[in-house]
Length: 130
Image (cartoon, rainbow, N blue to C red; front, side):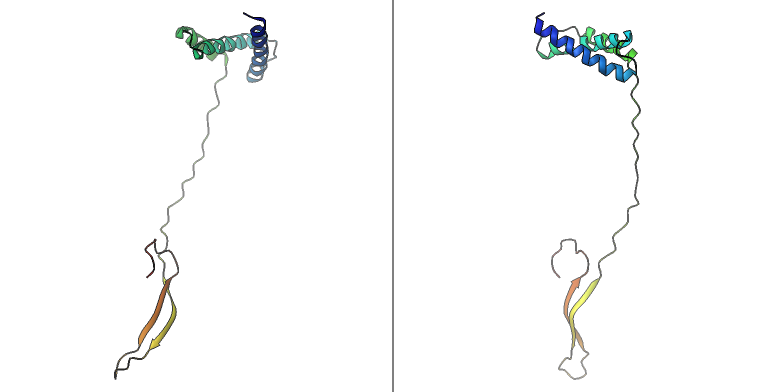
């Protein structure tokens, strides 16, 4: 192992030690913290070999996971709040008369007619103009 790789591994070990110390709420120099940090570093190294295309022993990776599971606290359950709102039907749009006027039919005794345009006050569901 080269000096540069050893330096990188050492720096990563100290970083993992700080992370594990916070996670387990133990001092960084506690032997359990150092043990878990070593396991995590070993697992990371094994995964890095696998990613680079080297053959690895999958059983060894599983053993790292089993050993780490014994030390790491269980994750907190996720809480989800769900609110269901009642579905309400939209009120149908009612027409509003615009420019309406009564027009007298020229025939004798004919009733008055309503002439004008209708404008909807709500949506007509994209059906176009009336």
